[in-house]
Length: 141
Image (tube, rainbow, N blue to C red):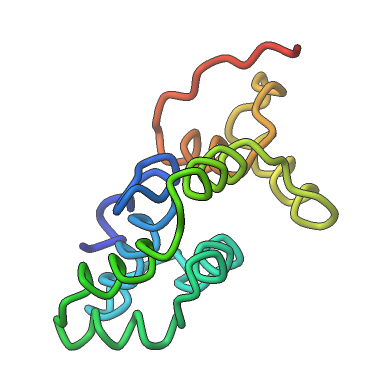
């Protein structure tokens, strides 16, 4: 994975049934190979998924760097969660708007890349727009 030439997976994509985790893995691989570009491994979004699963980010990265069995490592952590916990996590992770400084930064970025998309109110959707992915028009309920 060379993040100077391609995008990581979308936050919405699941890996081991978890949103954000595949993107985090892509960034870890890129960091391990020295081509992470403008991306940041263990950013606040990564930290949330690590905290939910009880994964240590340094251990995760070390396994990636050593080309270890990352699938078994992740599977062991995911298996500790019930299907209901996983479903709730995924749903809330992609639909919860940020607050405070994160909201201000996200809104600023969204207004730069898609000023006509004030329906986009979450980081996962803003990142998809920034990475040239399609984001469905949201309707207020």
